[in-house]
Image (cartoon, rainbow, N blue to C red; front, side):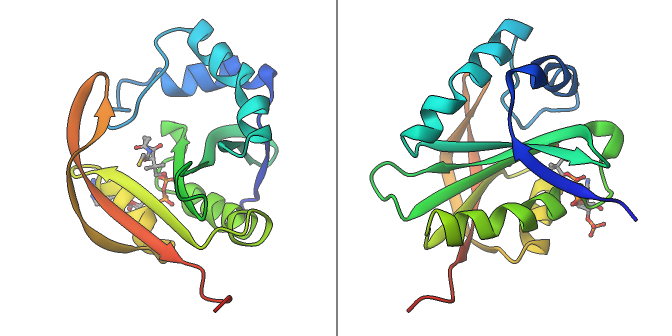
Length: 167
Ligand SMILES: CC(C)(COP(=O)(O)OP(=O)(O)OC[C@H]1O[C@@H](n2cnc3c(N)ncnc32)[C@H](O)[C@@H]1OP(=O)(O)O)[C@@H](O)C(=O)NCCC(=O)NCCS
């Protein structure tokens, strides 16, 4: 049985992340343009976490890095978090993103005490939309020019999931 785990991202993840994100199949995702870009991104993680701006995790499969995920807190409405995720293309279609979200969710609702989680996907990103639905998110609508990918604006579907345990 596959074992998916999460841990906080480390600077030493940079090379592997860059390798994963360099795939030309990542067309609906903002990719780093250089290894240095990825190193810079990772170097900001601790401060973003401290400021409750973004919490980023590495996804491991049987202990090996296969992707990343995280939650970005809406700075105007700090009860809302937006999820993001990516998986090494060699491992697509094995349920890893969905398992990673299931692991991330308790952290967002219980530790960060968020009330609402969102996922924004490019309207053509069928795999990500399927991950959202499998993870219990509902599609709330289509947002025009809502995501920027490589400096171009695209329409996106908005998915959301609400914390049901608290009144
Ligand atoms: C989106 C992504 C994270 C999914 O990761 P994953 O581990 O393959 O996801 P899962 O296996 O949990 O689920 C993928 C689902 O999409 C389905 N799927 C994938 N491509 C599909 C397609 N073109 N048409 C229909 N279904 C598709 C898979 O069959 C699977 O559904 P199933 O379990 O019902 O069979 C991965 O494709 C990825 O890293 N993409 C690039 C980065 C990205 O787009 N991130 C999301 C930004 S919003």
